[in-house]
Amino acid sequence: MTKLAIVTGAGQGIGEGIAHRLAKDGYAVAVADINQRTAKKVAKDLKDAGFKAKAYYVDVAHRDEVFDLVKTAVKDLGELAAFINNAGVAFIDSFVNSRPNDVERLLDVNLKGTYWGVQAAAEQFIKQGHGGRIVNAASLAGVEASALQSAYSASKFGIRGITQSASKELAKYQITVNAYDPGIVRTPLRDGIDKRSAEINGITVEQQRANCLSEISLGREATPADVAEVVSWFVSKHAAYITGQSLLVDGGMRYQ
Image 1 (cartoon, rainbow, N blue to C red):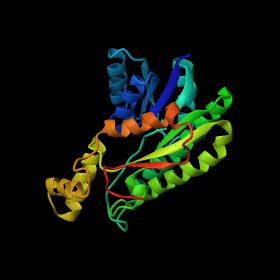
Image 2: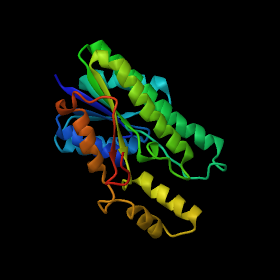
Image 3: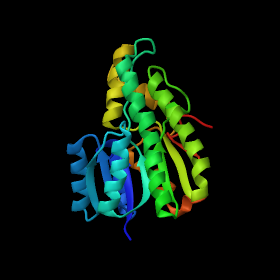
Image 4: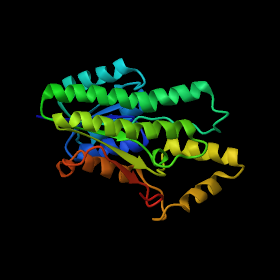
């Protein structure tokens, strides 16, 4: 039977990298994103490369859409084996100036969206009856909070909490729940973060990037493929005894 991996936020950046890596691992991939154009492109790229994939629209802030995604993808592509809660948004602003609409949308997507994803995936895994893998997108900002990213950091700390709590409850079903904590990954989302941070700090984007790069022990930014390797491991048989963990993927920016 075909094993299915659902990846939210798979239309670009880290999610796209994860989709490609899991396809190479032999999964049929549900490329889920709020941006239908990019989701369709990623799914087409995968199919053109000989993999099984299909694009799906989802706004993870809406619980019913996440549950419908799981049901539809299982019907289309096969039994669920892995669910990757990768979708997320970010904004940069000072704590006191952060606008309510921005804060609410971020928490709806990042924190609630992850919660709904865990619920929907767990329901399907329990129905199938033989375990499964859930992997959540946390962040370095959820290990050590970042200035100008108060809501984002709060959401990512919360995702680490969801990961730990869910792992304890779902272990009896042989469902593992883990998270990846990326540092600086060059994606369209990161481009926006650097641009806005530079504006607030009164420096150039180049200087903003150089300042961040100076904090990375390995001397380079991560690529989506770097993060995808960790996700691939989490959903593999090699991580069958790992649950409730959050793994830094930051090139040596912070040490625990």
